[in-house]
Amino acid sequence: MQLHRLVTFFKTIGDPTRLRIIKMLSQGPLHGQAIAGKLGLTPATITHHLKKLRDMNIVCERRDGNIIYFYLQPSVVKHYAYALLDLAEQNEVKKEMKEKAAERQKVIENFFTSDGRLKNIPAQRKKKLIVLEHMLKGLQPGKQYTEKEINEHIKKFHEDYATIRREWIMNNYMYRENGIYELNPREMWHKIDG
Amino acid sequence: MQLHRLVTFFKTIGDPTRLRIIKMLSQGPLHGQAIAGKLGLTPATITHHLKKLRDMNIVCERRDGNIIYFYLQPSVVKHYAYALLDLAEQNEVKKEMKEKAAERQKVIENFFTSDGRLKNIPAQRKKKLIVLEHMLKGLQPGKQYTEKEINEHIKKFHEDYATIRREWIMNNYMYRENGIYELNPREMWHKIDG
DNA sequence: TATCTAATTAGATTTATATCAAATTAGGTG
DNA sequence: CACCTAATTTGATATAAATCTAATTAGATA
Image 1: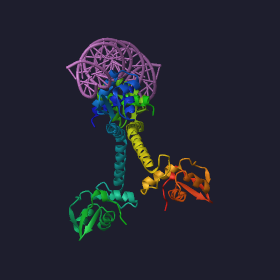
Image 2: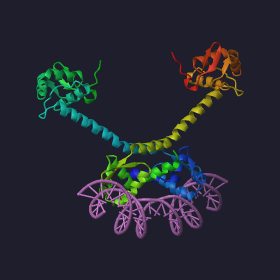
Image 3: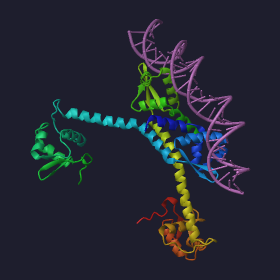
Image 4: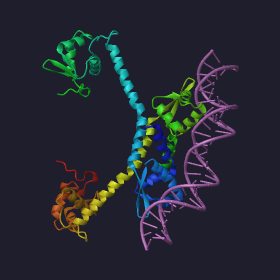
């Protein structure tokens, strides 16, 4: 959603008369004179406001005989309300992601040497998963690997390739079939099924 | 939420400069001069806008040394976004309730005579419940009734008081203890536990 | 077609407000 | 204390917009 549209929308509903019209129409459709009567304003003024509301698709109209009924469009209002929610939450989502990334980075710095080799496998499950995922880098999703290729890859990080390989399988990062290994899709990772 | 506060809030964020400030602050706190620089406006103008944002508690400030950092308050923004959602949904909620009431009324007209007696018990569960609830009118919650009193009450609607009474119990509208009957609270109605 | 009513447009007035330049204040730091 | 910088206040200006009255248009109906 472009900023300009948001501004125009909020400017539109940031007026006592128009917000009262919206509230009234949320109870059901009304025609111009009825609105004017309830608000104690002239029809001309109501037209002025309805034009703005129509321009933003907040209300629509339907003629019935000689009078025109104005309807609120709740879906449009909701749409902007959600956009506002996004704007407010952007902050928190990004902050959370940043914090997680920082935490992962710290674990990696703790358990790998400066030249990128694994010192030891963490005992805490959470940290172990971070370490295991880190070592997946360089393996391509969808590609099939022989056991030897997998072992060679692991040896770049640690001598005990058998343990790492077993952990990868156990934590669902990859699966083996007929001696061939392949990465699982990300959404399956570390969901260990009984 | 009073209308006036909503109007003031939306008027406040219905301005391009202020919405840009909000968007910027959603990425993290900034000080006045930084905001002025990024927007190409003078510090005086930024102060003007920040005052409005502060008045609505959309931002708060914290001094660090010589400069003041301005923080977005996402919870406040979210609060108003939800209020706007409510406003838009009011319509639909009420409409739904109206429709339900109309449906109930139709069922009651179908199954009761014009002088208020039950013609027969509906076969469809949904309609049966409506009919059973209708006949509860006149019984007071919290009051204890003898079986005879219950039967007399039912007879105003239908001769077969035994069936109706059994249905009331089965569908959790009331319970019996030592031959004494009492209405269950509404929230327990027709939750049949195995 | 003539007429009636609801809605809109046009024009005028008044109020609100976004912006800046310049002066002032507030709080640190030498 | 003197000084420095960020923020605020003040006052001026220009623009936007809410409202009204009066005139006009659009549609329906007799």
